[in-house]
Length: 487
Image (cartoon, rainbow, N blue to C red; front, side, top):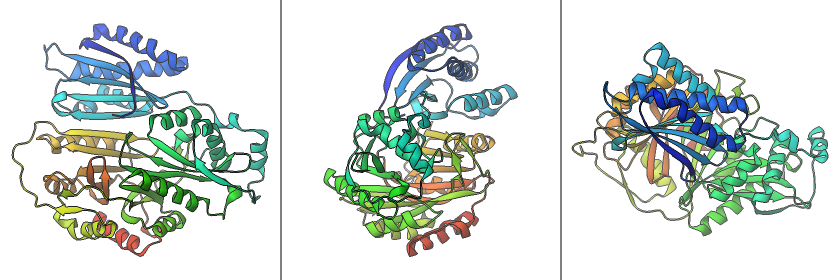
């Protein structure tokens, strides 16, 4: 669940089909004010009905009079329909057992922009159906000057430039810069929607750094993104440099600006994800002192079109290289490492200079009945990310059915984050290896502490020879990740 959000309405219902029409009218009345077309409203009603029916038919024992909550949430650039119940524990078996259940889930996945599942332990379970707000076509924002630049991309400029922080008033200028440079091929779709950029800036989940020319037009951009407002670690990304300003090291200069700002703000560190299609962005990270912490193999399609939301290559996928740069002292933390990976993880921890105590894993006694699990699938990227907040007695059975359900959706790469602050993580890491997972990366200070990320490749191709790595330690780490994948 996102930290920066506004609950627009909440309705509690008895779990009976009699109230479905009223629930759908309730949802339509609220979300219609957000500018959705009639077709989009029908899609929202359909996915809401499917999710409610799933609760009514599967969440409670026969004869049990259960209830569930229907919550409508406004987040930056999106509407979320959340359905919560305290019925039978989180079990994906019900979702893909039987033809009708399978059709219902596929319908939700097909009509929603994102579908998320949460297991909340004693608080029950939650499904979130995400629908992006209507977005302008960025081509309509282009000026005559922009169109002229599109026709003369190779023309370099010697204009005087300056650097500054981004304001909400710059959102349209950023979208125009991205469109001039990448057309529809840039991987982050929010950046094509000025209103969503403005909302994210206002909520505190991003802070951005710009390069502007003498006319104050945006010609470069680099964002500092947070998983929640007030987080002590940010992720550097969304780097864009206008084609006319190539060769002037704008990215490196914006990165210095970003790091100075983060250091003065007191952040512990900065993440970066670098493409492995070429070494240029990697060299910039290494120059600044960032340390490679792992690879997310088959992370993204070889080519992704934002306009069509589809990969041009269904099989060959690109890897992402993960970096961490420590900029201020973080708290001392005790972490529990899987025995198999202790040597490599210790090397990474020492290279970064983290304040860590390596604990001895022990059985911590009784577990809660239900694990706390959050899963998010991004169909357009072809990957899923599962985050484990707390283990429970049902953890392995839930993971087995969740893995099956995600694989059935033809998702190419599946990642799981396990909390290294939990002494049971080494045990469950070994258990997940028997499901086919292998080591991906170490992620420091992710949320409330460190995590170890595992990966599962679902009948997709990653070619090690096509992964370009700039640093010597990165090459050593890639060989380690590939070897563990093959074992």
